[in-house]
Length: 354
Image (cartoon, rainbow, N blue to C red; front, side):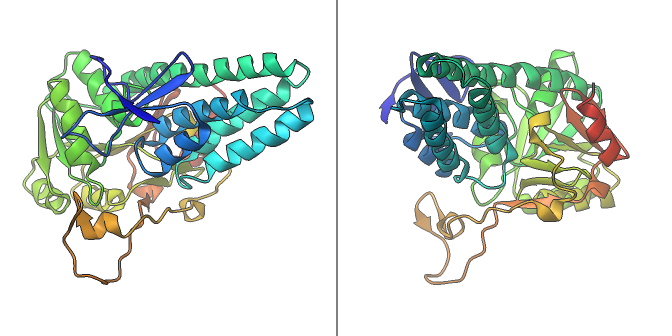
């Protein structure tokens, strides 16, 4: 892995070309725009684990590229031997972040492609896996633009929209889910403004969402997480839109910690609460959100900010990275296949038949 400068006008957090993957180090934003270059699957796994790249769709893209790097370097004489090694590589990548289902979705897709093409030569199989990884990356951008258009109709002209965490270009292949809806609303001629929760402890709203929206010239105001309820009570928020890391069959939504709190506040103040996520984020194998694994991260993310300690030495810390918002608090789930309201269990299942 090495640092390298890249001149790019569009926000694309992952750029793959000529057998190498460049990632915008999201831990450094907005202070520094640093690009890191990878060509080994172990490096990509560490980039995912350490949050160089984050956001469920972006993690899926990164994992697919990492799986291709691993496949490229496999030395095997038979397809069975190749598949055994490839599955171990995918398992290594899958272990990095347990909550975001897009990670496992992308790796399962790569494994399914390999399994379906074991009759090819190993060299042909490797070439095919590279194209499959590239296809996953390209599809993410296209599907999120479609998702954005589906959701834009829910955003009124003149709306003041609260967001939590970052579900924008940085969290995807380059357009965004929740922020993709807002971008699409602006592209449709609507005037909107955004209120971004800072999103402790990793500050994705403060560091990333505010940075993205400023670059797009979309008006954004930053607030601390504990200010949302007050602004709702003053009538200064018209709707809420967030992304998701996993959605259960009944519509329960796992997203960045603090999302549940925002949803409760929105319900109390009769404000629409929208979730934007691609179909790859739906996990219909889980009947409800209680079955979604919740990642707990390093205590230093809570006790330190910018490397500076802000809490007493030795104080016990809880740092769940996600929470689950019950479906009853969600006004609509927006996907590239359509918008679901009301009966989520049936509506989400129907999306896969369209």
